[in-house]
Length: 163
Picture 1 (cartoon, rainbow, N blue to C red):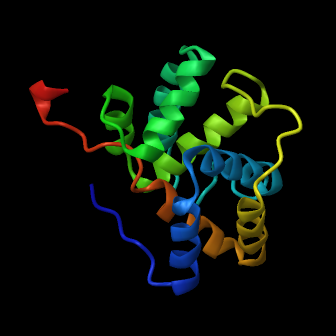
Picture 2: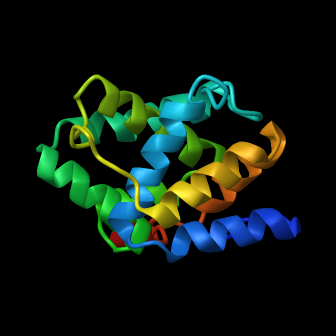
C-alpha cells in the first residue's frame, strides 16, 4: 500500500498527533471534525470520481448491514490495521475513495445507520486541542491532512485466491 505523504511539516505533525491518540479518541475526533467541517469536506473532495463514489458506497453498504458493535469494531480495525476482508477492501481503495468512505460513515452515524456517538460525548483535552489546530489550517491543508490520516489505514489487499 503506497500513498504519498505531504512534505508539509505542520500537516505531518498533526497527522502523527492524531495517530498517537488511542483508537476511540481518534474515532471521536474524526466525528467532531465531520460535525464541525463536514459541510466543507464533502464528497466533492478534490479528485473524487463516480467510480470512487461507487466503490466507497459499496463498502459502506456492506458495513451498514453489520450490527452496531461490529461497525464500531470495523472502524477500530481500520485504524489498527487489522487484517480481515473489510480492511483489505479498504486497503485496496485510493486515498480519495478512503476519504469518501469515512465521510459516508460519518453521514451514517448522523442518521444512525452506523453506530452513533454516545450522547453528550466530550472530547479528551488532547483531542480538543488537535481539533482546534485543524480548524486553524486552510481548507487545502485540511483535505491533505485527512487524506494522509486515512490513507495508511486498513490492511494490504491480498492476491487473487487469498482474498
